[in-house]
Image (cartoon, rainbow, N blue to C red; front, side):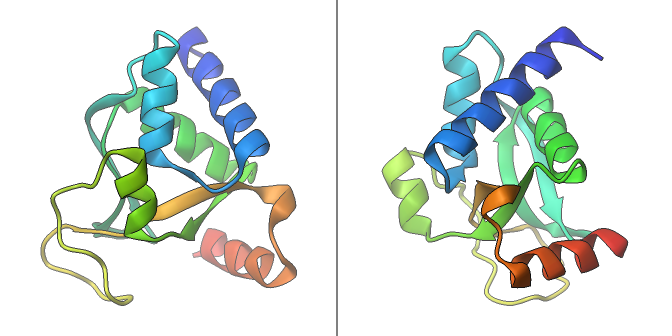
Length: 133
């Protein structure tokens, strides 16, 4: 495994465990501050819906690290307010997701990432069912 990706995953997990409810904007900045490209042109979408984006303008390393950590059930996304991203200094220039719908054009779903150990039983059930789809 690439050394940069391993370092990025370690930084991301540490940040999420320490602060909880961490936006991808915070994670982009975290990687940039640690000599790893955090900002780029990569996106990440949710639930097999390529137009429901949860990461916009992230680096390939950031997106791959998040995918790995989600797959390994170390973190999970939870809907967040746009205000979180305003405070963090980055709001993508995309329309917001309003409902679970197969959008024809890209829309942004603001999420915060949490440590899987903080998930409720209901959230764990939803995570498990999403992973099996």
